[in-house]
Length: 329
Image 1 (cartoon, one colour):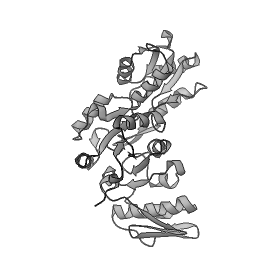
Image 2 (cartoon, one colour):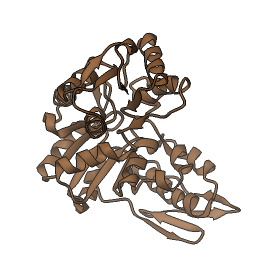
Image 3 (tube, rainbow, N blue to C red):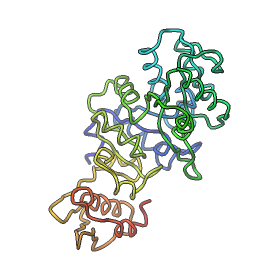
Image 4 (cartoon, rainbow, N blue to C red):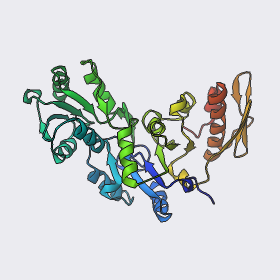
């Protein structure tokens, strides 16, 4: 059997919503990762979350039964550090607005981390903090108003959790943004620095990115010219896909990252109709119509992929078919 991953020399994974949800591995992921290792696929774990060091993330992966070294993990702080080194002198004073992991990585890179705007930082570096103090946001806003440059690790407004979506780094950045007239430089997805850093580390020529968010993972892959697999285990779902503009549309879809080990889902498209895996849809009065809906998840994903081709290429409304796909979130 030819698997989707066989066409690529490396696979890059977002973490939250793709590999795990908080403290729990997504069903089947440890086993699928082990199979990918057996096949000799180079793996990189790419996270916008700057709340933990790469070492802490790698340890968490190992606790979940997933083989990972510290070097396999690239976070947005590492990519931010590369930007800081390009822009600022060694030893520059930085106001860190984030966790101790952010502080540790900035200090390891040779910068002096201060705790208040009164210490005259030349830049503010903001990352996600699950227990952020409002005073830190005040300090960040005032330091930027006083002339400090502004860097943020990533723009994710939300984070998936076992209970549902919760506010992410982008939400905290948004609080500061309301008070200032500049926007932060960002290294995390969908911007280039984080993905460029990971591809260089893996020495990959033709990698594939696996993600659950259209606005960071899929757009980020598009930004660097990389194919992508969208999975339904995290933040976004079928309605988001149907509404997606071209840069936010994935190359493939799958129930989970285990789809890498299956044949790729390929659509046959003609004017007014499309089919995937023997499941067909057509357009009736400007609306996507499915003659039948399969009872299994993979079959429903086939119908969805066919429907998306008509929505994206011909602007046909797919709401009715989407509502019928009860096994697809």
